[in-house]
Length: 356
Picture 1 (spheres, rainbow, N blue to C red):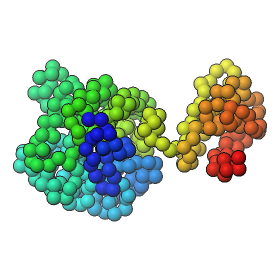
Picture 2: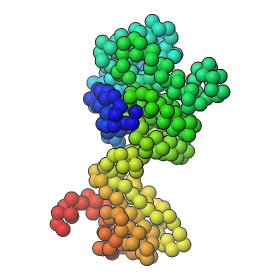
Picture 3: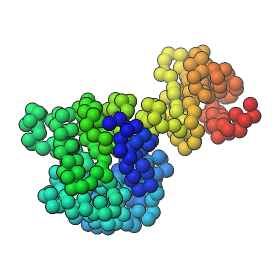
Picture 4: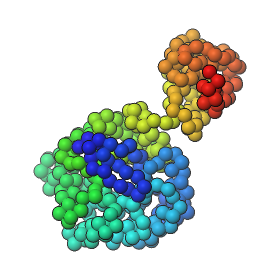
């Protein structure tokens, strides 16, 4: 089911599905038992734009730590559980807003029922997660390998187990590190269920390769109207996941807000350190709450014209910096003052527009 028509699910103070905005999720890499470190990381992720946070719960101490963590954060917390059903129950009892389980590794139907009963009592959503790395042997044999069809069948089998226990407050995730397999799996499952889908390319890799794979995979899936929450899974700092997720959503026109920086490739006409300048601008604008496009151009010849589609732009020449609006040069400044001039314009953006 496409996101406009998926089931609405309440996760803490957020709603997903049914056409609600796509929410960004990340996962802490601290020891959940370390409340202070975990809270500090979550607060930093909140400030960067994280909407939902997931924490690993490998021990009973971690499950109990959720109660104190919840008191100090402002976004929904998802408890990530594997193998031990008692940890899922303890996580919910200590304030988890959602739990993520794979019923296949929780154990017997009785244990799954024990988890479902607590979730039902507290109206806590369950995210049923299936990963290509843990696809059941019989499905691998049935489909002659790990396939999109096998992932979908596995996920729906797990969903049916919980439905048969009388519970349908569910979210589904099916993940693979194979981009095209993951995209195909989401296309297939979207035709067969109305539950909200959490989308991500699992084990995508380092900051470089992971961003490329995630941008392509999430782009394919989200552009088709599939997906209600996302995570960019990177081997790196969780803050980088949020930056990338926000940019992916903005690029697809699925989220507004944040300064978009566009810059030209370098060429033989470039007479300034364009690479350094563009990176400085991108860093500078991260905390500026404007929904505009900024162009950074390295050539005073073509810069004004190329920057026409941006709200504001800068270009550099030999010792000279240009401030550009609407494709027209509005100010010339010494090159070493170009960055400060741009920042001043952005910080006074609303008042500058009013004066016009």
